Length: 416
Image 1 (cartoon, rainbow, N blue to C red):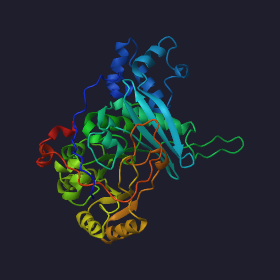
Image 2: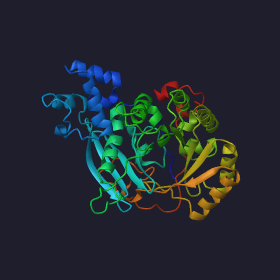
Image 3: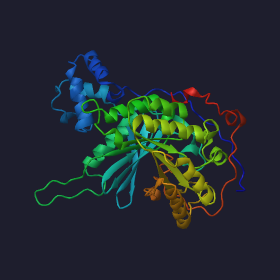
Image 4: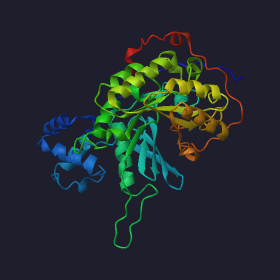
């Protein structure tokens, strides 16, 4: 590791930007009814509009399809409560059409990406919670770009509803074609992972609002099972503990990437606030409260975090806990000199973790050819697969003193 170190500044507070327009998905069921009454309609119209959005997946641009709403007022209702929040700038596919990456532009010009993937048993969308990210992880394209702003609850939900509509409409590969006289079966969106751009727990209110809209039954929400929703975090301990009290038993995924503080301080700079032991203690408490197994995310970086002794150290930390390790072959990003571990080193890492009784799998990497895989999202309209970097790796990542010195959890509002 000989490259020049780069200072990292953690960015918990998002820059102030104009707020997006009010949207039905920002509101609770009671707030929607009140909004409709303010517009001069009966309260039950809110439930009808919600059913179109969440259950029927009606495109708001197709106002005439909402025939249960009065013709004279439906356009006004839609304009006020279903405004356009995201405009698709581009869509790219790979993996024989089974992976689709969308680049979105918000009302104020911010850009973000989401990735929709079809697997044999499910369809999953990976959504962004922020435009950019303020956590500064050196192997992640999003983290290197910095934080533009938080997304609203509705901007997050809209990524999911649009993905569900895309699957329903047969625009994602892998759907079953019906026989003569039989309808095509394109399936339905089944899983949501908050693993796109941004640190979800740094945008706590909007993310938990989105979680409620996704899991509330129709017409209040999309009706997904909380078990099919995963929230990833680099380890904002106060927010993890707060999430455990929300009554939302979603799966927690901790982006660990290193078994010790010395290395994790460099790979995941927020570790200088909340070290490995504190993060894992909060994760185990989350598992105790929710009954949900914690996913430990671990990017495999050649010569950096993939040694046998590191596997042993990680195995000892996780043994006996309600946890599952998800190893992620490092995906190439522009400017990075790091490479993915070799298959042999990967297999040995898996073997050693399993020897400690730790359930371990290797992630099926999707979207690499369109810069849509883990760590590659950068909201770049011209992004394609980055060149695979050569051997070697960057030097230590230096975290400025004011951040590095604070391991006492003083940033209690990091998850607000």
